[in-house]
Amino acid sequence: MPFAVRSRRARRHQARHRRHQWPALMAVLLATFMDLVDVTIVGVALREIQTELGASYAAGQWFTAGYALTFALLLVAGGRLGDVHGRRRVFMLGVAGFTVASALAAAAPSPGLLIAARAAQGACGGVMVPQVMSIIATEFRAGPQRTLALSLYGIVLGAGQAGGPVLGGLLLSGDLPLGWRLIFLVNLPVGAIALAGAWRWMRESRADRPPRLDVPGTLLVTLGALLLAYPLVQGRELGWPAWTVVSMAAAVPVLYAFARLQRHRARRGLAVLVPPSLFRIRSYTAGLALLFVLFCGVSGYFIVLTWTLQFGLGWSPLKVALTGLAWPAGIACTAQLTNRFGQPRARALVMLGTPIMAAGTVGLAWSWAANGAALAPRHLVPWLVGAGIGMGLTIPILSNLVLGELPAADAGAASGVLNSVIQLGNAMGVALAGVVFFGGASGLAPPSAPVPEYAGWGARALLFSAAAFALAALLAPLLPRRVAGTGPYAPPPGRRSGPGSEPRNNPGNDGDYRLISTRR
Image (tube, one colour):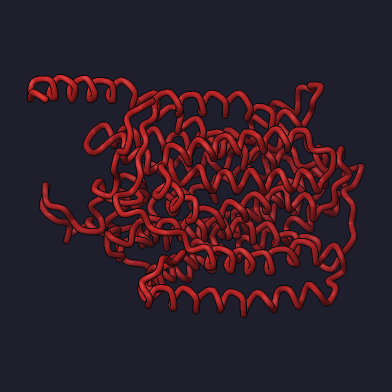
């Protein structure tokens, strides 16, 4: 073929790619927004769901924890599937499955079917979400365009987390015919648009050297997580029968067998779900523990907020959602400054932010206990803003800091494990918050009228979240001082800085990607 013809075809291909890359990004971000909203919107609808379906408190916990658990368990495997089978294809399968599961959740006639639908949503989200950063890295190679794409991704993350409860409150406050089922039905048009956009504009890509999936490891870690989480949620309601203790005890040898399997497979050069070499780095291991307990506290706070304010004091979903916005408002006060200027002093900011979160949560617990049935938004907002300010000092840089001492080649696997640990923390936090909130009470049904005593129970459970934040503060000194590649030892401009040279949530360097098709 003459060179001029090849050159014209290459220019046409590049022009087509430039036209399509931004619509493709919009499709990806729309699916991301759908996932984030679906995580946060359920909390404000919990009372309506439990009342209509006659669901117990344990079932209500599973509406939240079931999603987080399946999401966590499939995050790493979902990234591997995209590397092997193509990220566009796997992303579209995840979006389609998430949309179908949303329809099943909206039609669920019983708590058990809703729990199953929520678990399916989490599993499809675990397949869909890992492709997002890979697709951004493929479509936007480097420079200002990738920076803008990542900035838009960050905006969507914030909007989804803050907007979900408000959207849920608005939908439930309008006395619309379908009630709480609307919070799942809104996913249907959103998922259809994201799916059509991905099919029309997104290019296919996969890893140059796609890793294999560690099926035995995935099954073992799933079994271990279920053996631990299921009795924590169900045990209190059933009066802690003997099998709950046996199940939690059995989780220990199962997880130990998982660790042994990972070491054995690594020695033989086989694919592993969690590379054992990562845990030889103290800062990474301590960082995972810090993230786990931190998000235990955060998820515990959200479920306690719902139980106390809606079931206990009879607040409307919209009132709860608007009051809860004080937390992300506090985050917004410091997050951008932390993200922009905090990398050279990252550990110091985490050591400052986590105690502020603990102090704000203790203040919140005190306010709940002191005001009881007279609790009003003005009693909560200052403490919520304060805790959010602490979180804004911590969260924007924490993931990069935990990954700061790892070799660049391990960044993708380490990021997948880190995100899975965060989601496991969310699931376990919901389970443990229920144990602390209800204390020794068992077999309680959701009340038909407000129960003022719940304010005291909520204050007790908030102290669990405060203790988690305090424990995170104790672990913070084990982290590196700064994000790699920043501070006085940063490399000169234009020189790559090793593990800090790429965005930490990028699953790999540009060379890890290969476009395998340009057909739409």
